[in-house]
Length: 245
Length: 245
DNA sequence: GAGTATACTTGATCAAAATCAAAGGCTGTC
DNA sequence: GACAGCCTTTGATTTTGATCAAGTATACTC
Image 1 (spheres, rainbow over the protein chains, first blue to last red):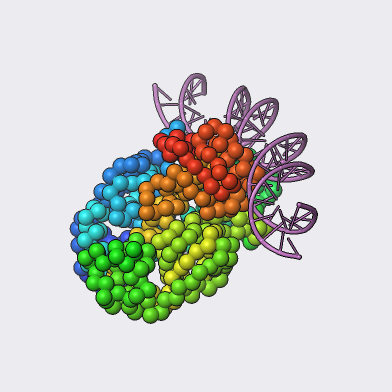
Image 2: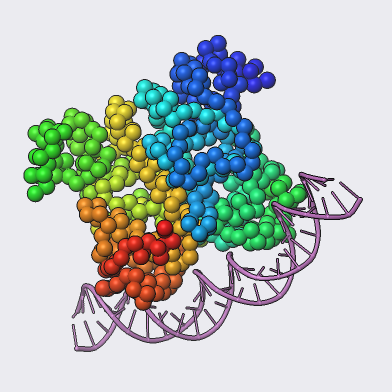
């Protein structure tokens, strides 16, 4: 079914596209969209598909980064830690985001699979060579960096100035608007993060997160099927609870 | 003295450089450093030097952005506001940083002069034309975006997980390491922000900021000459109070 | 199906920072 | 030099969210 929809696209001849890329969800939204078929072939020759289990660490804070990757499926959390163990999640990446910090050898943060994920990983050297010869690729990476910067700054407002209630509502709103890129805002979804992760993303404790979810449920802003599954009857109302209007 | 030091540089012939650029502090660290003399001439023909008073707004949240700028002198604060007036400063920009969010018409944040500042402003259209013809310029802007992203994520850890004490110490450390790009870490400096601004940067109230500064003074971590001037006898000790080790 | 982790929720108490309130200090003007 | 206006500090009290402590639910193992 993916293949069929590919064939309807006019911009690129499918016969030139590497087989693994043809069915790839990330090829249009992701960084690969700017590459010519021959560049795509070059990249795919060195790329490796990988499935990663929830909770497993992909890169550690301070480790060397030898790979870039496109997220094909799932959610990745980026986090930072203080020496005493306090942790803050500084970003979530959803498919089909690009992962990796260009132009630096060492990661300033740790990346961990929040859910089960599929990635398409590329060696650093190949990406850097393609960047040098394809200016469109650097532009695409630049756009991704700016998007992440905007998101980080939005979240700073949440972290610094919102109440616990508004923080939790903001998180639920973020998930509702990002979890399912196909359809617009999902009104029903599975949370990709545990309560502990949500707490680390919001600068709260698990107890406070739990209490605020309960409160939102009692106020009728959300329904909770089980601890992971959430239903939002009125997204506008959730937004107002998130302090966004 | 600036002119003399220019003459010692070998990479570019000064005779080709526009007069206003030759004495410009921002030309080496700033975005202009990647331009050829002729591109620099082109840019400088459309650039305007401006002096802006402390506290005056340069771009408002949601306003159209028609200019980019290099900060020649001073500190600019970038902030976001909730509809009820709560405010969060999401970034500080020091000379010779580049200002402006490429590839978007409307600003998602407001920029205000924290101190008196001098800028060199360029119309959006000129920068975009140069970006298209000089790939080095986009690379430079990309690097600046990545730097700001790293800084934003560092600050998210501060906002989400540090105590008031650590937040204030982190702020003082940030200023000590950024205010004077010439020398390394300044051990004595004027705060570029009022207590109200510091509070908005740290997600605290002015009273809490004031109390924590008093406490750091009583603990001998800093000396305070007047409300703006701060002396740091031991930067390492300040770092430890900031939770960085 | 009992037993055991693990994740989540709920309750009671505590502490850090916010809020409310007042008093200094510094700058500028007349 | 007195007064006004703003910024900053300090004090008293309250509130929010953290911490401490059970208890419940869910999934996984044997």
